Image (cartoon, rainbow, N blue to C red):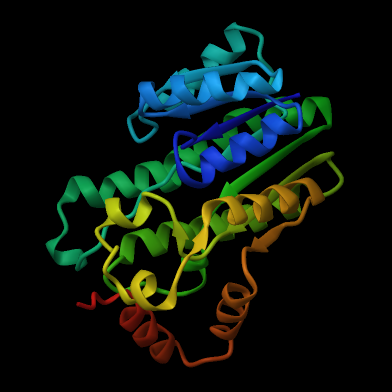
Length: 257
């Protein structure tokens, strides 16, 4: 059995890779950092699995198709697809550079959708497969100061729930996994390490989050939220006025000294 994980060089992706390796899955790991991938490959091969690494920026055009075609040419069928690669950027939308806005959409939405479109048909032919699309608790409400990121994760949630319904009885499951704030390199890259979310509310460990995601995927759950507190918050926004939800979302995102 072979599992493909995008964004596998750090954080949740790396922790998921370790879990799959320990459970005897061969791996295809994709990320932008060749050095990190090489180090991880050496580490995980100690579990007696094969590890293929591919250095790709999935936000670039044709990268997803290149990945699929390469694996097809090498006769490496993918049994489990984990769409984990994503990034966010902090700041007001009107002040954000166009390349940052579109980069989030290309990676978080376009690449995820394209990879799902490419790898799903072979799974359906085999009547066996699992797909995990990593969203976020950001998917459940608007996110002032991270408007594009929150919107991309809302797409991932809606898209995943819809195709999970379409695939019922096909032998293929789709799980949308929604972590909350997690200790990874994400906050630093996004520029939100000093937000109330990370400074005061607190974050979970990537190891614990990955275990929750792995379990949900293997159980075939359609939507899974990591952490009881995150689940309560995500569910509560359904009953609160939208303006109040948006205001609270902004307050949590604002930076504190």
